Image 1 (cartoon, one colour):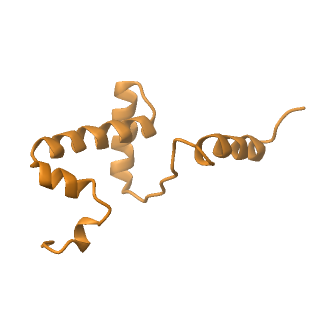
Image 2 (tube, rainbow, N blue to C red):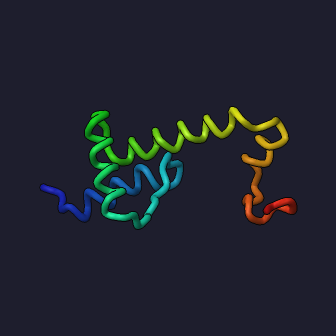
Image 3 (cartoon, rainbow, N blue to C red):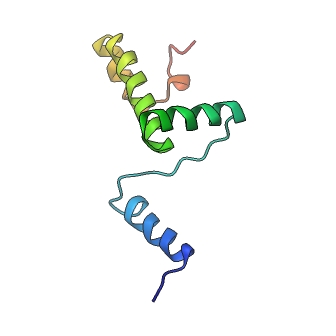
Length: 89
């Protein structure tokens, strides 16, 4: 029996997004130019757009963390969002 696309998607979500899953879904709107750049850079590096987004975010996070003190790193990983912290600007 061949699975419908809807059933394939449901099973994929159960595996990756369900209980014990390793992913979360992200939905964003970006400009057309940004989307085209994402497509180009992903293709250039031979990865998916999801993979490229993960690479870019993780690289930028490493750069930010390398500039922070231990206290700032603790705040960075804290549960209180930056904009809600007492000393937020």
